[in-house]
Picture: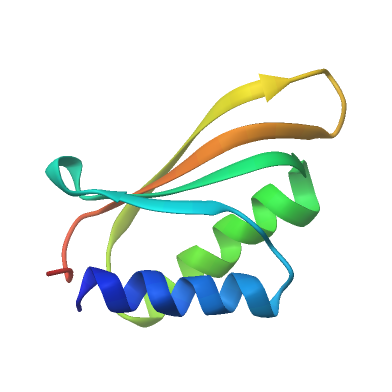
Length: 91
């Protein structure tokens, strides 16, 4: 599947679910990434991981998910980057 189509589809899914993240793709490592600024751990971060993960799984794209916390103040909200390393099924 073409990475541009994947990004376009996921942007629409996030928009339909009122989730906002900066989306990017880093070709050398095949990383699709999402930067979330001050989102709630459950209603933003976990929901984003579920929506993107379900989309990739439905399209037979294997991935490894990781997350790097960029900013945290000890509350339920924090900023982080979610990385989906795409293992196959992408061109």
